Length: 62
Image 1 (cartoon, one colour):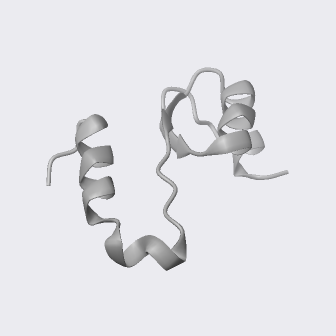
Image 2 (cartoon, helix red, strand yellow):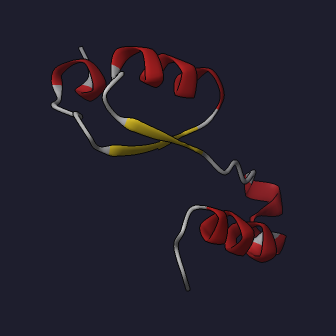
């Protein structure tokens, strides 16, 4: 069993993507699961604007 199944994530914020996001929402129904940001390694160097947009959309200022 992993942390998601054994940890107390009640009321916690969890960031995730894709199928894992769906699985986490099902397993941790009391947690707030935020939409994740996928950045592939090959595009990491040019992802600054995407990251800033994602942070702003999630209420995080930089």
